[in-house]
Structures are given as structure tokens and as C-alpha cells.
Image (cartoon, rainbow, N blue to C red; front, side, top):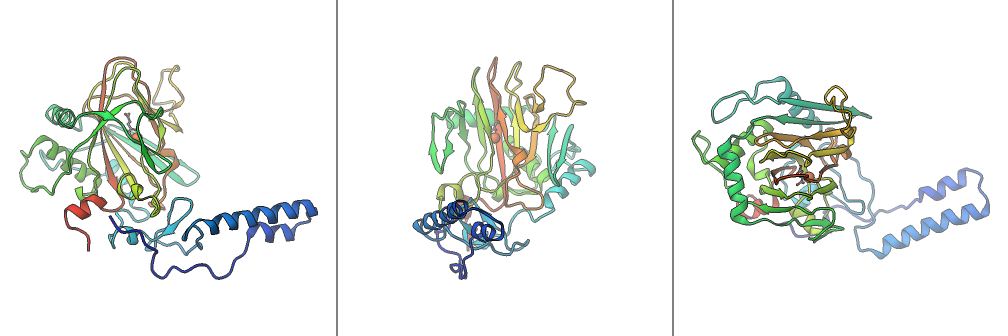
Amino acid sequence: MAKQRKPSGATKPSGWSVPGVAWAKSVSLTEFQRGFLTGAALCALAAAAAASWPAVVTKRQRNATEPRIDDGSVEVEADMVYRGAQPTWRPGDQNALYRRLTAEEVLDPGDGRVLKPTSIVDRIQHFRSFWALEFERFADEEEVEALLSAGEAVGFKQSAIRNRGTLASNDTRRTSTSAFLPERKPGGRSSADADPIERFVRRVEEITGITRERHERMQVVRYEAGQFYRPHHDSSPFSINRSVHNRVGAGRILTAFLYLSDVAEGGRTRFPKVPDDAARTKKPARAPFLSFQPRRGTLLLWPNALDDDPWTNNAFAEHEAMAVDEGVKYGANLWLLQYPDALVIKSWGLGK
Ligand SMILES: O=C(O)CCC(=O)C(=O)O
Ligand SMILES: [Fe+2]
């Protein structure tokens, strides 16, 4: 975990201009309106000054080598937090992954079978894309069982959820329970008969091209009848002033979600900002948004970032786990990160 500090070379901005005031002068406004705008601008400045540096920041040039990290109040360079690590994705890499997975043959590193998405959903709106790929029978029975046992061994607890930067449990937005599995150490790459979880992790490394030092610890989730996880985004914004975000949840550029059980009724994973494709769903009763039915062994893969700006969340990636009507639903999250996991940097000695 990088110590919080100011980015070197970043100085307080020299010249201030308040856009609201400049604009107010250029149009004809009443004295009252002008006074209101000036007052609002002064309030904003005072509020910013009251908060400690760097609550007020200049807009810097943005380009591929100088990422902007923005949680709404601070702006820092990624490598200040991630100790010079290279980002996983540069602009364009996300769409390149989509093309590779949909147009090329990706082979299972274990048994050599072709790993092909069985269902492809692709939306492009306002030049910003979102896609989700479903891989049926991605994990075999042994792998599914191993993940379930690993979850049981850790123990399922009321899932924690971040609420304005602090961890809170018993959140009404998430009633399910979950278990974070231990870190996966670097594994030997040769044996095809590795342990089942190892096989699964290698397959995810193969399809995504993202190796395990950029994986978060896997999280097994469990929902009993009536339990749900309301709409949320898996990736929290980067920031240096909320240290918890740096360790968990920041820069989850991809979600690989493996269903560990079939669910008879309910329990769908639904994307409430992505319209459904009428051609895919012939059932008129279904909500008109993209959703997936849990099927044991099926992997669902979707990006949480923007292709042209992988440091920024893609709003279309918002999703929810709808309430399970009957039976118990299990799944496993494997989040793939824009920088090596901070905990891994520390425990594997990957930091500088
Ligand atoms: O259970 C699901 O379908 C999705 C789970 C999820 O969104 C999460 O754990 O972040
Ligand atoms: Fe999620």
C-alpha cells in the first residue's frame, strides 16, 4: 500500500478563473442573478479551501501515459499509488480483447479446447461501448465443487459494502453472504493436471490476457431465497484520500463472474442501464434490460471501464443480482485489475 502523499511536481494552481463568473459577465443578467452566481462560486472556493490539499486541483493534460485518476475531488497520477506499475489496459486494449475473444481462437491452457463465448452481447452508445460475454461450461464440475468447498472453508459472512468510503455490513443494498478466498501465489505453468482452482485461474488468465498478480482475491458469493444485491458498480473510483479504495475495489477493469449453481427462479444478473435485445429474449414478461440466468459452470465476463479511458468507469456496467426466488445461488467473482493488487505488491515483493 503506497503511503499517501502529494504527487511530485504537482503544485497549487497559479491563476484562478471561475467559469461561472466569466460566463455571467458575457451574458446579460440581472444584478440578483450575477450576485447569486458570484456567491455560489465564492462558496465553492471556500469549501475547496477548507478541505486539505489536493481537494482543489488543476485540470492536467490527459494522454495515454499520464492517466487521470478522479474520485470527484482529487486528481493524482496512478503510479504515485501503484509505485510505477504499468497499467493493464491502455486506451483501445479493451476492444482488442473483445475482438480477440469473439473473432479468434483462444485455447484452454489445460486441455487445449477452444474457449469460445456462447452468447455475446454488444452495445455501442454515444461512442462508448459495453459488452458481456457468456461462456457456457467454462468451469467443469470439479472446479465448481472446489470453489464451493473453498468458500465453505473460509465461511460465508454478510457481505461488506462500501458506503461513502467506509466499510459497512448489514447494508440493505446487499443481503447475500460472501467469502474471500486466499491469494493465489504464482503457479507453475506446465502441468495440465493442476488443482481445480488453479486450472480455473489459468483459464481466466488465458482468455483475459491478465495474469494473477492483477487479480483480486476470488470472492465466493451465496444467496438464499429472498436475498439480492441491488444495482452497483464493481469498480470504485481511484483515489488517494480514501485508502480503503486503493486496496479493494479500485480499477476493477473486468469482472469474471462464474455461476456455481443453477437457479430455478430469480437470481438473474441484470444490467439496468443496458437495454435488452428483443432478438435474444422472446419472453415478453422479462424486464427490458439485459440479464443472465445463473447456470452452473457458466462464466460471465464484462468490462467495468471505458475502452478509450480505462481509468474511468463505464456506467453501463452497473448491475444487480436479482432476488433468488427458490433454492440457493452461488457464484464466484474474479476481478481483474488495472494495476497489480496492492496487497499482492506487498506480499509478493513486487513493489520497488
Ligand atoms: O450474483 C450475481 O449475479 C452478481 C454478483 C455481483 O454483482 C457481485 O458480487 O458484485
Ligand atoms: Fe457486482
